[in-house]
Length: 195
Image (cartoon, one colour):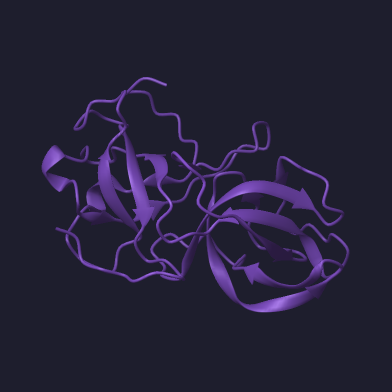
């Protein structure tokens, strides 16, 4: 994908996958769950046929929230069959609508496109933090549509992502540039201010 194309794909693992763990999606989620979707810890666990598993928050997209886990790398139905996505209100087995593998290491690198809404992120904003914005995922591709909120880049600690550098094939400051990021407001990490 070339810089300048608005083609949101969510938040994809960049480089080595450091860790992925299984999380449950409660029955009848309010939001649909897609591949490469940033998810939040649900702050509880449920008994499943695969043991007691922590859940992800499914009441709303957690854009702007703390307690983020990382991004989904695989999505399964209640029988652990791979699926493109878990639809909102999916009943599943009555306890879980399905399961997700989440790249949840606090040092995991991801690649994510900026939304270029209002302005593009500038080269001088590397090392700063930014929130992301939600979008409607694709039931055809199964990909999430979250993007970096380009207007939110700042030094404040209470922002979702840490901006590291532009994707090597893109040009920083161009619209819809892809950036390499980590989760700043991570459930297992430390939220810190940007440079």
